[in-house]
Amino acid sequence: MQIGVLGGGQLGRMLALAGYPLGLRFRFFDPLAEAPAGQLAELVVGDYTDEGALARFAEGLSLLTYEFENVPVAAAAWLARRLPVYPPPVALEVAQDRLAEKTFFQGLGIPTPLFYPVQTYSDLQDGLERTGWPAVLKTRRLGYDGKGQKLLRSPADLEAAWEQLGGQPLILEAFVPFERELSILAVRSTSGQVAFYPLVENHHVGGILRKSLAPAPITPARLQHEAEHMARRVLEKLDYVGVLAIELFEVEGTLWANEMAPRVHNSGHWTIEGAETSQFENHLRAVLGLPLGSTAPRGHAAMLNLIGLKPEPARVLEIPGAHLHWYGKEVRPGRKVGHVTLRAGTPRELETGLARLEAVL
Image (cartoon, rainbow, N blue to C red):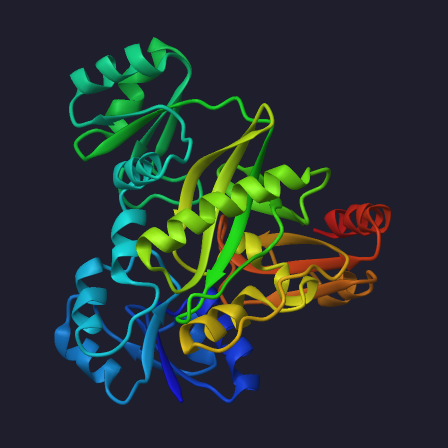
């Protein structure tokens, strides 16, 4: 069976690595000839608007999925008229527009930061009267790893933020004084079977995920239940198939939704070594209609992104429980080029290993 994947980045690469033991074959579609998944499987290079290239890509495939949430909805919908596409294109449509996403959450009764649509400078001023200070101005589309957003601390920040981001659809969000950032990974199969991974605690620097801890330390069972309830509502409303990630804020013992990603997710990379079944294998099981694997953690784990640097492998691998993943990408400042997963039997052992690993990195 051959599976098509829209997007040829590191997430696709890890999907292929998880799928080969299951006897699967892969074909990737990406605008870039150097996409890292092409090192492992057939890569069709083309533009997402090129129906001829999409048709050549789809020929002979059993089904399609994607590893990149900014795949044009029109391309996914065009392909969905020819073969099964999971997750459904409507999930892309919701997740690609922050205003649609927040409105969607609100409609399901899922708490979010206060938000306000912004088209003009006057809208921005009106919105700030509602959100108060500080607030965050974001592009509605695109923008990731901290790009496309500006923190507004005072009126002195307005002109510069508008000069940088104005002239496109924006959303203004009230700044959330959160205690920590968490994420929940859920997976739903074509048969409707649902499973959840434990909540993960995420640490960002400059808007880029640097470290994830799994399971999230000192997390009461009620928070896990609350996150699962949120995710289940999203899965069922969208008739979702595959892995879904929802990024969350913990605010005074409650959870607020920030964003969702309709794909396997960076904060789930720890599952490759740290869970009974990785997010990548479970995504493939889900889209194929196979029974989902256990999401139980195997002890305690941490994931550290390698951003703009390539460590000496021996220095990483000499640390007990460390596993190095290199994506085959050229090293550039600010670019995710790999990650390290660290596993340990106890929180104290994990803390000790993390101190050594962070010293190396």
